[in-house]
Image (cartoon, rainbow, N blue to C red; front, side, top):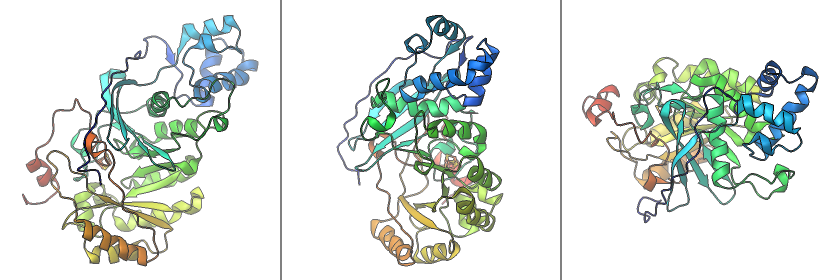
Length: 397
Ligand code: SF4
């Protein structure tokens, strides 16, 4: 637990250019879209595939942002590209480093909006938690982001750009000419779409961004190292299996519709039964081994032995892992974290039923980077505790 760990924060400002007006930013364009804009802007069709391959490798394999540095293109062509296109990623406004090594970046995107990105280093992996929306339309009552209204969806470039921001900061790009696999262990080895927003309400952009991250001639992360977390947007789940094929996590958090309606209000639209029916199909279609069920442990709300028994009964037949998340408090949050003994007892019941049930170690709490704590620092219009409780139907408890 890091709650009482000493806080050592490193706040730094990294100035970087904002997107330039008039030029087409190529970050976030799929190979097909990139090819189309190149042709539209004068690249002969016959050469276009080769040009896409070359530019792609510079941008996504070696992290180059200057067309003039792309030395396998003719000088004239580099100049032509530079006149029409830009290679822009979100601007880092601040970086905080937690006492446990977790890094939280506040990045600015077009329109001056801000989102948070979190890098969590572990002994065997480095996970980047990426945001897909500014704010969120959903209002999960345990989630800090849910208190911030949806401002807009992120573009594919702004989503994959978060991965590029982290690779810049960690100095992870291989030298030009060196392939990704030859430049030592990966620092950003996993992506989780668990930051701000509901990724399945921004499906196309999330899909395009993840296709770019998975592309073998660029960032080259296996689809098994990418996990998309949804609150349960049932109609989009099958599409995720077919069009992205990544791992899936579900914000489950409750074992009865009555409680889930309050914690994850989208449950009123697609209830537990409908969600589980859809989830049963996911591993077959996406060829992934199992689904992760996220379960936030809230004192006296969803953490009883009965809940644990009900949970294993509900998910029976679904290859699954249950991630138990000790609740991370935020200013005004209407819940408390379950006691540690309770979390362990719950985990034991799930484990005995044959499911992995790790208790997630809170990371980056001292910099408000832990799960469910993200929110734009500039967002001041916080709802009061009373408002949140009212909306969660807690009857002013
Ligand atoms: S848990 Fe996810 S879907 Fe729910 S409010 Fe928070 S960001 Fe939105």
